[in-house]
View 1 (cartoon, rainbow, N blue to C red):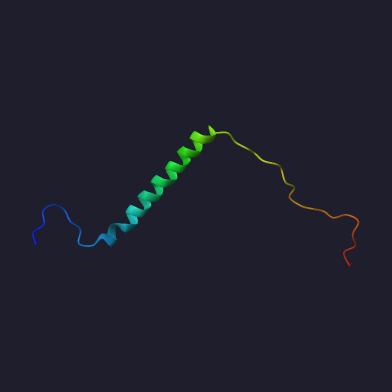
View 2 (tube, one colour; view 1 turned 30 degrees about the horizontal axis):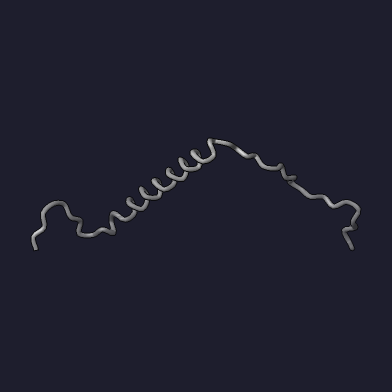
Length: 61
């Protein structure tokens, strides 16, 4: 078998950088898609109270 060019004997060593690059590519694509579809519109949503107090009930009942 005669091979010409650069060949890695083990592709597993390069798997982590390839996966990281692909993840960065996908996340950047999703950010751009979100920006394109929503034109940077921010929806703050309703303000929810941090606590709910129940008045008129006994703690022992």
